[in-house]
Length: 279
Image (cartoon, rainbow, N blue to C red; front, side, top):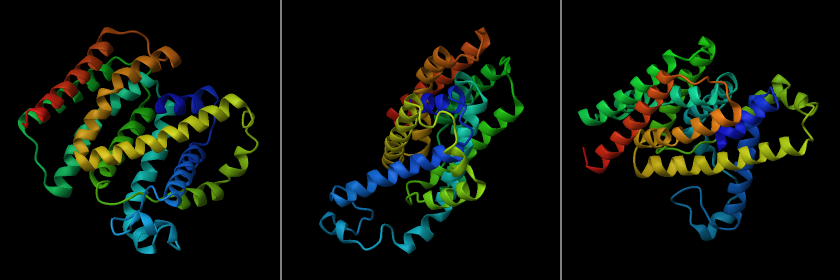
């Protein structure tokens, strides 16, 4: 659903500022987090008790900001590149190419923590990648720029997933200053659909789903692993591809494209089976 709402804002309404969408999503998340902290439902550190979480003089300590800066920059780049990728490519091929993130995640995990996966897991990931290449080989709407942006997104997401279990993401002020200096915020006020109810609803839903999906991604990555989260994302892509093709089109029917997407889905299922069996 998040991909659909982002695609609607960027393509259906032709909103030109991906930075503003990302900033809106972060502001929405900050408001929800602050409200939950004020209601003593959550705390921001393990040493902070819920009973005292409302008495903190600062939202986040300076030490935490310094520690999270590298991950914040990675996440920020990932979000902005994601918007650009969604804008320039049809939804079915976007989800298909994004499956290659599992390969980047495996490499990143190896270099960051030395984690080595079994040959069964590597084989299932190989099937996923093969499916992506088979599907992409028959994409008649091929755009080298858009494809490159998707692969850059995958690299950013791999680094983000491999690091997210260690530190929290704080990067809203950076994006705010960048958007302000570029003039995106001022120009957004003159956007012809800015006060259009349909546009506002789509933007609001995009922000809401971003908050919830980020929470679930962090939780799943912390409890399981970065690679598991990457595979879980692939499993839902079959639904994203179908709905994206129905709502936005852009990808003519082709046997090889369907075959590639089926291979990717089967690879994801094989990985899930290997993890359940402890392989």
